[in-house]
Amino acid sequence: MAKSKITYKTEYFLTISSQTRYTVRMESFRFETQERLGDTVGEVAYRRIRSHIVNGQLLPDSKLKLDRMKDIYGASVTTLREILNRLAVEELVTAEGQRGFRVAAVSKAEFEELAALRTLLETHALRASIAQGDIEWEASVVAAQYKLSVAERELMTAKEGSVDRWVSCDWGFHHATIAACGQPVLMKTHSSIFDRFARYHMLAMNFRGQGVVDDHTALRDLVIGRDADGAVALLTRHIRSGLDHVMGTGHFG
Image 1 (tube, helix red, strand yellow):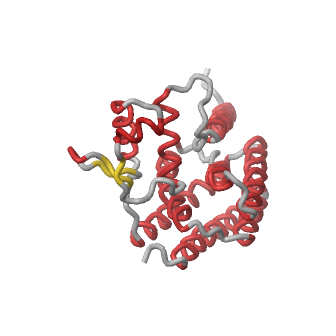
Image 2: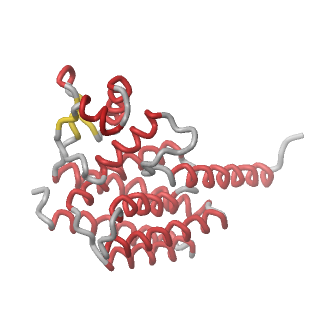
Image 3: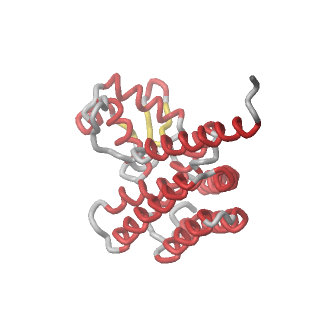
């Protein structure tokens, strides 16, 4: 017997809900640099190196010397080469053939392009997520914004370790808002663009302060209130404001 349209629709939204829970749970570890049960040496080293590039500890265009990295990250030269090739695909590292690897350079033009791409992808995903998300998705958005608010308070008081936590929590909140979009290819592309966009903020290391905190609170309310037009408009201004703020520091020309 053929399934009814209602059954198909129910199964579709149950699948979206399950994917959302799994994606939010997995992505909460995206910037986790500590070893977890079952991790390989390579997985831990990959997360640490990527985190150190995004948060600015590894500076743009700096040479990545494998012998030195072997001691810092506790991975073999072979494993490090595999990791750096993976990060080259993500455009966080530049491969120089026989000359090895460098941290990817930065430029005003790239930052502007990344802002435009992030806006395009994230606003599209946000509309879909607001349309399809369930109560568990709403709860994940609220929880992620609360964690971010704590990290923002720590950042404004210069608490030790606050930068790493803020990078992780800022990503976690914005990812949570779009996690119910049901478009895994878009989500994967967005993740890469978000990392590269966030790196500019970390390199400028000039937090926008209370204004950005207010933006995140307002975005949470618009998202769980299912105001797609309002949320998209705020997100667009939020990304543009971040671009203007970082460019205003004079770090990138």
